[in-house]
Amino acid sequence: METEEIIDENCNTVEQKRLSEEDISVLNESLESEKVNRYIPCTGCQYCLPCPQGIDIPKIIGFMNQYSIVHRQRVYHREYSLLPVTAECCIDCNSCVEKCTYHIPIPRIMGRAAELFSS
Image 1 (tube, rainbow, N blue to C red):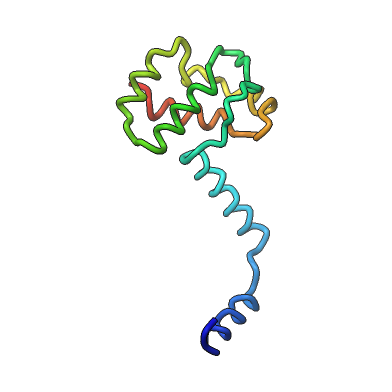
Image 2 (spheres, rainbow, N blue to C red):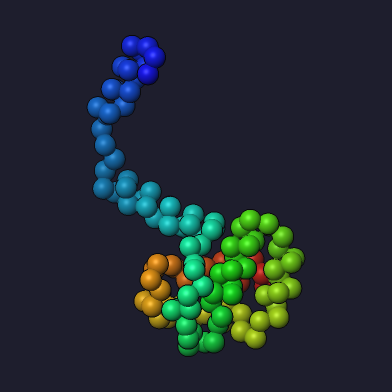
């Protein structure tokens, strides 16, 4: 802070009204939604498996993470189409989320993968 004006601005910012609980909730929901569209913090530990539908969750999440970096939908579409069971088979049972140590919203990710990589 090099000037009194900058100091005053910073002080005013701190003194302003804080966000309401409702505003914080809306922001958190938005952040969670955005997490699905970006890198997913999956370690590939496979604790989420077995999936009752037979989905290879870590592999699909790997495709999603690679896609978030490269943005080459065609490349992952081909790999995805070779899977014996694809994300469209997810029944949103949440058994994977309960087993995931990171509580990753896997059913939402499967939905996004189905949108991105299906024919």
